[in-house]
Image (cartoon, rainbow, N blue to C red):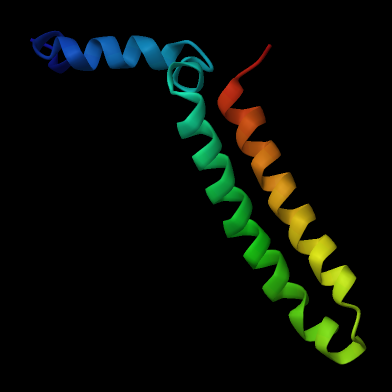
Length: 87
């Protein structure tokens, strides 16, 4: 007897993942925004840390803020593009 036939919940979960973007659309807007904010700030910090030494040497703090915002926005856009599925 196959494993999935013994566990109907697993079968339904597998079928729900077969449709692209189903999980993304089934979550609440608040959960999606919290995920995007978490991804944004995680990668914004990585962008800030990667440019921190150059900013300390040259003193261009605006560049540091732009790099942090850019890396956070690009990573959040990737999450939206991948989780949303093809349109």
